[in-house]
Every structure is written in C-alpha cells, then in structure tokens.
Amino acid sequence: MMNTADVFISLPITLLFMLFLALISFFFSASETAVIGLSKIRLRHMVNKGLRHAQSLQRLVTKLDKFIAAILIGNDFVNIAISAIVTGILVQVLGYHWGVIVSTFASTFFVLILCEITPKILATKHTEKIALFTAPLMEAFIKIFHPLIVIFTATSNFILRLLKIAPAKRSPLITEEEIRMMIEIGKEEGVLSDEERKLLYRIFEFGDIKVGDVMVAKEKMVALNINMSADEILSVFIEEGHARLPVYAGNLDTIVGVLYARDLLYILRDKGLFLLQDLLHQPYYVPPTLKVNELLRKFQSERIQIAIVADEQKKTLGLVTLEDLLEEIVGEIDEQQAKYPK
Image 1 (tube, rainbow, N blue to C red):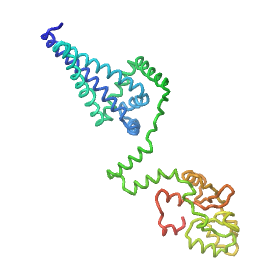
Image 2: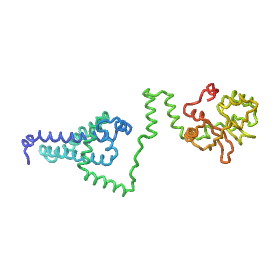
Image 3: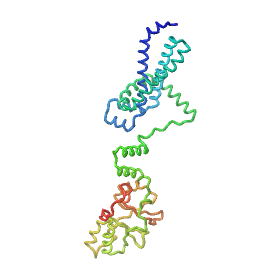
Image 4: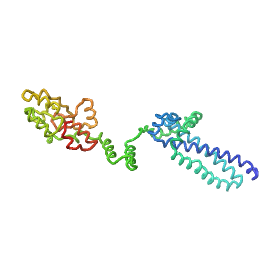
C-alpha cells in the first residue's frame, strides 16, 4: 500500500491528468448540446453563407445516431476514468471505507459541475460557435472509433427491432407549430405588427378553406340575362361595379358564359349591332369541395379570375372570384375600391 508521502508526490501529475480528462469530457458535453440544439434553419443558413466547418456540421447532423453514440462512448469512458482516479487517490489517503464514500460524492460533484452542467450551459449560450468548432473534431473522432461506434449503434437498433419500435422518421426542416411560435415571438418582440401577424395566420389557414366556404351563393349572384339589351348590360356593370359577370339563359343553372368589363367597349361602339354571344368567355366550373389554394393555382395557370361553383349535375351553387380568394388572406377589400373594374 502506498504511503501518504508517495500519494502527494504523484498528486500534481494525477490532477493534471484529471484536468485533461475533464477538458475532454467538457468538449463532448458542449458538442452534444450545441449540435443537437442547433436550429436546422440556422444550419442551412450557415452552409449557404459558406461558414468554415459548416459542411462538416451538416454531415454530423445527417448521421445523428453515430454522433450520439460517439458522444456517449467518449464521455462515459472519460467520466468513468475520472471517477476511478478520484477513488484511487482517496482510498490511498482515507482508507477503503471512507475513501469509497467520499470519492463517490467528490467525483459525482466534479463530473456534474465541470463535465456536464457548465459545458452544456455554455453551449446553449454560444450554440453556433461551439457547434462549428467541435464539428470537425467530432468527425475525426467518429472516423477513428468507427468500428466501435458501428457495434454500439447496431446493437441499439437490434434491441429497438426486438421491441418492435420503428426508427423515427426524419423530421421536417421546420414544422407549422414552430413557425406559429416564431410568429408569436415576433409579435411579442415587436418584429411583427398585429396586422402582419394576422396576415401570416390567414396564409396558414388558407390551404384548409374550401371553395364552398368563400363563394358568393347562388341567391346573391349578380348575373346577366342573355336577352338583355346593351343599355341594360351597361347599367348592371355600372351599378354593381364588377369586372366580370356570368351570363345565363333562362335561369342561373344554365350559365352560358362570362362577360368581361373590357368588352363593354364593343357594346358602346356597336349598340345596335352587337351579339352578346360573340363576346362571352367560356365559363370555368369548380366543385364546392375544391381547396381555395388549388383554385388559386388553377386561376394562375388558366389566366382566369372567376369560376362558377356547381355540383356534380352542373347545377349552379354560386360563384367565386380571385378577389374572394385574396380577401381570405388580406381581409375584406374596401367596397369603394371594389366599385372600380379590376
């Protein structure tokens, strides 16, 4: 058994070695917190900016299972070594009984404070810098200990399969809930105004709305009878202020076309000679169950701004315009402005 003098002679070297191990553990703990806690959006931004080691960091994030295994292997090995050294010193000084008891508390305190809590707190405050700094070193560590890491990850995956636990699907870059949270934070911190906040929320809800929810019902439709005179047609356009109006024959279930306000020029020029049928545009039919975001895409691709909403028997249920869709995002459009043709 070593005497007390021998212990204290080797104590400085032992403490230096413990400090070295503590720094390694500090590195692993800080790297774990920084890499896992890094926002995927920030990571993509860092890669796009071409920051040093950003590509290395991105590679780590794409193989998190190996990264976590490497962290646990390295950290646990170092922490166990620290505990063993502390126990060895204190057993030599205090004897086996008290040495084991005191070393248990001492090593636990040492590891928790210097090797776990402190580096993790530091990493939460300087996530990006620490993640970038540690990424290439962690990549090198993973390459060196790759066989051991593969054994551990394969064993872990085998146990998960035995328990019939499916591997987690890769999460999206950012979820809708996260974006909503960012909007709320932006409002609280003054980055977004209340109107901007409402606008962003309307955009989220836009894809869930159906055409039947925003259409002008059949009973409220403004339409032209195919037999109307030029003066009557002009009067309706002027009074209602619409840019486009459906034209029907007999009743609203028989829509024969759509008349555009710009075609009024022909009516003004040839009042006595014009044929309304020659000016009509083909009506575009949509079901009430169609999502408004899909209809918006159809409006863009077909270059139209009005559609007739009908059931499976082509019975008219109402109409919907581009303005109706935009109002779901920007809110109600001022009626005075709506009086001018679009």
